Image (cartoon, rainbow, N blue to C red; front, side, top):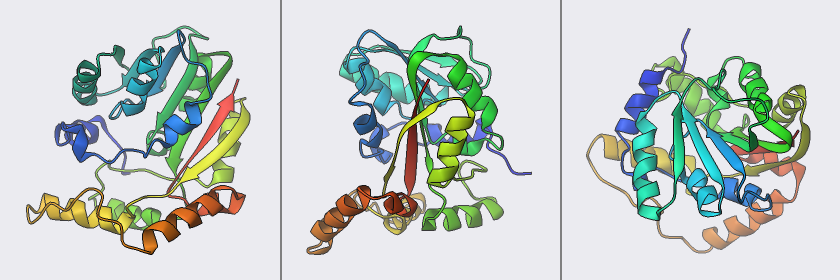
Length: 254
């Protein structure tokens, strides 16, 4: 049975020590957290990744813990923290058995993490355990009905997927899991890949083959750029739009 292992992530972050080579989440997490008060509150990102959003929260005055079960991403995060002059606290631990007391944090969030667990409930239950009353949990995952899903599963079958194994969720499935974890669903959001999946795949393939390095964000082509922005803005206001996104997330409250 294929699975995502620490070795997959050690290799991933060892190959991506320069954060500028990694696509950001286009501030979708930041937009969801902007309305939450974080100053002087303890906040934790589970599955530290690049740490971009944690560093933004530290800049806003939060006490930030970044937790991961491998240490390789901490190198990336420390470089950014030093450059920005902020402090974060890295902790290497299993996300299903975290070394914190109940109710420690006012906000727990993760992106690109839950889809690597075949049973997500132990992860979510542990998230809720360390969350204080009135605190928030944000869960961000790949959306099921997208070309990314098809391409990903082909790569998993071929044994070529960078993370070994992962799954995906529809908006209703994600909300159901958050409710099973005994949280109130505040809202669900979604975001599209810009530039798109095929361009990103081409760019990565050419870089791996050392044939060419395409710009991370290609020049906009009129009228497709303005039309795409208007379409996404229209779809963002509708529930159906969530089912066309590449990534979705749900914000829950304890």
